[in-house]
Length: 433
Image (tube, rainbow, N blue to C red; front, side, top):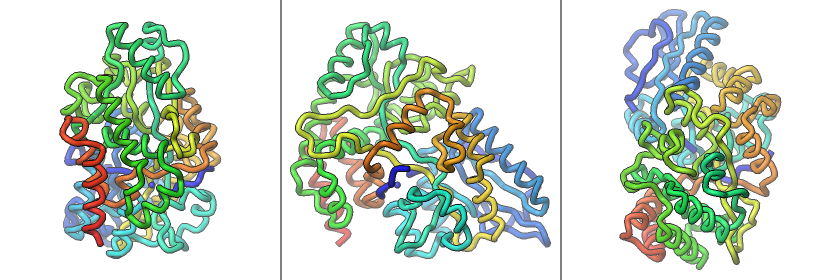
């Protein structure tokens, strides 16, 4: 499997499920393995908060409890956009969940430095060997701190029937072809692309993608270490985003459109056939399924193609932007939390995860369970990529990544130039020293 070079995710008070009697009840929403005599309560935060994914994880927890009658799994299922904020607050309050979604990159390094997350190198050695190179994105100083359960790449999801109606017969492989597709879709009276710019990061992914295409691999590798953004390729990436915005491909009201919450979100607009495309990660089919009344999303109308190539780019055209999600364990969680994470990485659970289009499994024995043709095509692109570049806001850490995302969001609002993005990013990097 492809090596992940530097890897993502997130939570809200949106939904809380308790699958059995709780422990002592004195642990708040976080974890630390509440204990009541011989019974242990494990808190588990995840973001499958709708539809079949929510039901599946509930069943997974119940199955684990059936085999471990002294353990109670207390679930908090949250919306993706909220999880990062809530995890930060929980860590700062010393009340982190026992099992949570760890994003990797600079964020994981911060957690490790603060002794907030458990070193799994020895206690999950067998699972780490099974996962192979995919654990690289969650490794700090040769120690593994989280186990990836889904790794994917970001590309364009599209409605095959709307493409057909617009006369689009081939998916675009270059940006010249992409602009032709945008024009064809608009000419057919449809909105081409939805983007959840209201949440920031979906808009930022466009700048990341163009940077990946225009910057040589060495430039990006060096930037992660040196935090030097002086290469012209970063300016060129901004110019590409400007050109795209000027082409007006996005849905009405995109500046305030949320990413994935509700039918009016960017994912909801694609799921309900209000737009023809959306650039999103591998989780999109599962998200869309939860946003339609029939729980099917776009069903067999769903297609996928990778981010098109650019003219004159210095980046490897086969490299992909992406990342994944991993299960982390709080530093002071009980041993039962580690056993639960091992169970989550088992072939049995990973197969169910793949069969429900919840993501792309990392257990090699479960990869063939991905039945959705679009996701199967995405896996081929993932596994043939020379490398997968981790989402920039995760790779560069919260401070630099946050400044980067904010300035890109301003560009979408017509209030920032390509140079402004570089200047804001560099200023945040310099402030870190």
